[in-house]
Amino acid sequence: MNTDHIVSSFDNALNKNESLILEMGGQVEQQLALATRALQKEDAKLSKKVVTNHNRISAIEAEINASAIQLLALRHPVAVDLRNVVMSLRIAGHLERIGQYTKNMARRTHTITKADAFTGSIDTLARMSDLVQSMIRSALDAYNNRDVEIAEDVRGEDESVDQMHNTLFRELLTYMMEDPRNISGSMHLLFIAKNIERMGDHTAEIAQEVIFMVTGNWPTDKRAKGDKTSRMIFSPEDLDIRPDTKDQG
Image (tube, rainbow, N blue to C red):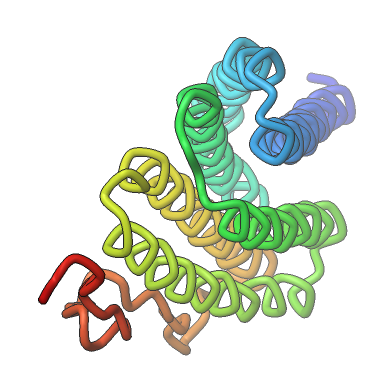
């Protein structure tokens, strides 16, 4: 038996799987950039393109899954090779979820083009998106270079995304309470903000899986979770909203 050929074939299969992960991640990052541009420009045509482009992301995930399953079934990898294969499945799953959130963001953008939306919040959403795009690039860099330090940095950056989400939640709630006509557009912006916040969570999970893939150990410290929106309760007084008294007296 030519063991050198078997080893070479296995290495080639691993390398192909890793290349697919990087390609998928690049597609996801590009999709998020396009979806953000569509939101900023209120470009319904571009938002439709983002929805259609998601098919490519799904196709790459299916290819990664098939390749990983074949490697597990035929090669029986162990130690670091086993971690590489299993983590490729998990990372692909996170990237696909980010892609799904991006597609939902694009669909809501298409709806927002027909409704009033708070421009200031769109600017904040764009900054959130820029940060998550940077996190995705860094997470892919950490994966490609097996760099634990970069992966740790990505985990820490997620808290900034959470803080921006908290601020935006309060801002949009204030805007809706000031005038009910703002509710429709603002609700879609709230959902988009939550989508981006979840993208940050999934990217931090990718970074965590890179750490395990390289070291064989999960991070022992709990990742900071700064999203407080699920526990926020507001009254008009909290938001400094005063009743309209122009027609009274």
